[in-house]
Image (cartoon, rainbow, N blue to C red; front, top):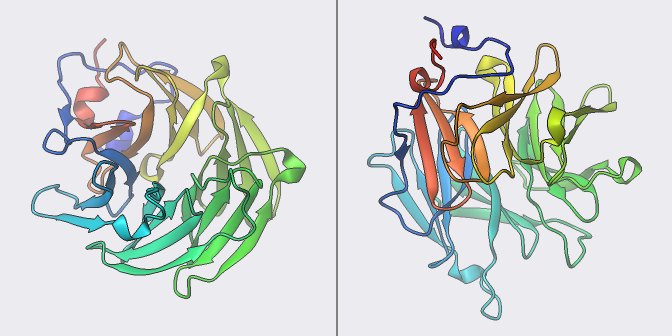
Length: 291
């Protein structure tokens, strides 16, 4: 059975109640997931108590690297990582307090960093997204999206969102289209990177979005929500561009859901929940054929 055969456009997905999800962070305490990289399946985590980054490999066994961030401390203030993305060779981490993006290798050896220009004192960079030879990064208070060349780490202004009254929170790119979410909003803004046109999509039931997760293999974008229980999943079908909300039979984890993606072999459905939770579900256990 093909993986894609499991996905039928419907407003209801039956979640098996017989499967207990595996919490992959049981062996780590006080750790918050900040990135799941598809299709390279690197998991970047942050421990605020000892100010370290952790990167886990695809199989989560024997691939465990740590980078101490104490040198980023200024006057005893910890520079907090807010987002991360991973390409085939590097890990990029956005730090909120000083509005910068740092580049690491796969073992979290520091390479270089770049500061985001003209930020305000209340600016944060919650959004990172890979595109072509670089990545986008957001400034939520200045309503700007910047582009960083991944080779030179040069940064340039790419898109002003002030005309659209958009405060960008999280972003993702698929097929030269940039999807932009706002915190606590049910509206997704869709910007075509080729035609330079903007439009919006609104989720039903006033679903408040949190972060964006993407699974291009199944031709959908999956979104995290601010719900206190993981019982519904907002989805955009990329073929029809129709937004919908998929409902679970019951709450599976405590929320809000932080990131939703699939791993590199498409065998497991991955849910990372804000806080010390990081769940993986077999797809066969979530998408059941029976009620």
